Image 1 (tube, helix red, strand yellow):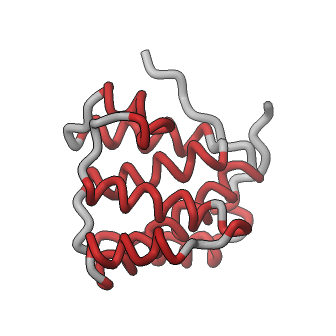
Image 2: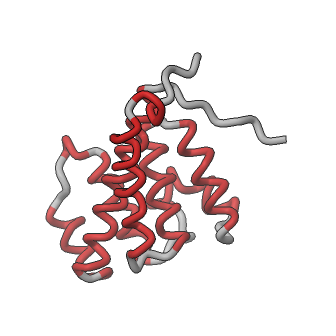
Length: 147
């Protein structure tokens, strides 16, 4: 697959707006691991190889384990994730797969476990990574081979 345009060069103002939108995440109460779980899981669902590569590497830098990263696609079937992380991942999946809507059960559980402010942060983090995934996928961004 050949890389297409570099959207930051072709549409620099739009790209700057995305960077500004992304910088919002630095101000949230989500931990670095929680942010990377959101970014990685949404990127897995969307099939964005560039973002999967980036965010699994970032997650490892923050101390995430290989075991949890490998199990992320099957998180419901493992004992590896906390109740908070399970709520975050469930909400991330439903916001990413928005055509199925976010169920009342998932939303209510997230608010119960995380509170409204953190639930809002999870929703926004998911929206941001979904936007980046769409840029990465539509422009064929490729991860670099790590040696």
